[in-house]
Length: 137
Image (cartoon, rainbow, N blue to C red):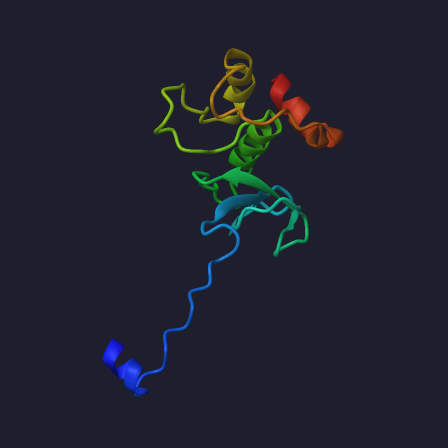
């Protein structure tokens, strides 16, 4: 190919341009319409394509429950409001996240330094009393 380029029978190779931004997607959840979307990580807030609500970054290992499973969505919302994010368990030897909404309050109280609890508790969900009521059960 170098010989063809030298004689003018082949166009020179185009310079490679580096991609900007993340090359992976992260699960985001909308608690208003109970849907999950994969979105590139961003610093600014992301709007739900379905209902226009706010999307919340959940982590790369988040598996969304079915839309109609309101108890599981309430559990996910309660865990999110307590500061839990869904990243891989492979690098940590820790207790698994609770399976039921009724187990969340005890789990949060028993594991204040759980490796998946990477954010401060989010009081914006407590405005409607939902998260506070769920965590006190």
